[in-house]
Image (cartoon, rainbow, N blue to C red; front, side, top):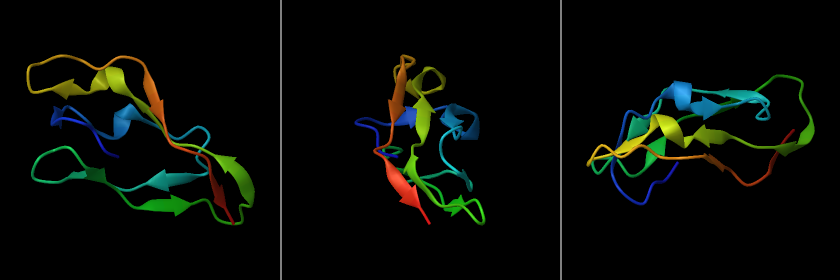
Length: 80
């Protein structure tokens, strides 16, 4: 998950997996805190063409303390 500036407060509670058909492992930031990675594990025995991962931006703050607004969603991906 990439941000255009360093962020703080970003954790698993900010990730919405309702339409993901899987789980995410621990989030790990790069040194600049602009790129956060996690391992996605699809749900077993799933074959779904429409999936997304959503981020609730209200839980994320920039270094000035400004909270994000709204949501950001991944592009669609398939799980087989």
